[in-house]
Length: 276
Image 1 (cartoon, one colour):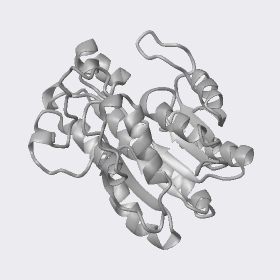
Image 2 (image 1 turned 45 degrees about the horizontal axis):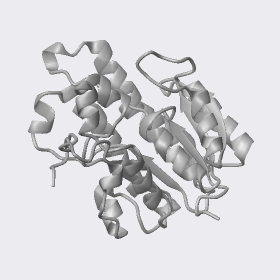
Image 3 (image 1 turned 30 degrees about the vertical axis):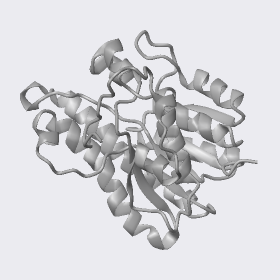
Image 4 (image 1 turned 135 degrees about the vertical axis):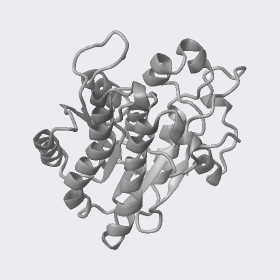
């Protein structure tokens, strides 16, 4: 029986990509998973909906609750959290995965894009965390995991897309502050970020198409790293900014070839971290 058997995960934006990979890894243990995301209808550039995600989660061995949620909507978030608790009896783990990206310099960043990134990335993460905390306090080993980068203040990470960097670092600052604030309650707050590009719709659509995907790793590397974090003691492992390959290495996993989309391609480093 897996370590996450019977645990309940609330995952934002988990209808595809990294969020779905984390959900399926937990489902393999027999976990319950709420997918709280916006996609209810197929999209030509974005594969998967909350309903197809739920089917994959249940096929992997878990129980799924697909909920149409815009995390900018406080009432809808509260309703989704309440429905999760009603369905599964509580919440053990929150994955703040939902994110918006626009890699534009200042003069090319429309304010509606700026607002979208800050409302989803920073405000959404804060809101969903705030809403789940009273339930996490009742859990045996409660974890919050934000898919957010380490707080690297090198100006090069701000110069070309300051609005996006600010929005992602808002998620990171939630980890920094909430880990300390809720340490006494035993709730872990950690961040996880990839060393390389990950083969997701965002990479394909925004960062270079199929060529960028070939230079990426599969979302499963993030799922396996997340699993390691989420099965550690929440009282002993909190306030950390984790990189996927470093988490795996801490468990003796150093051969990462199986995660490569194309083992012959040169891996593309992700933002905010230095390549090895």
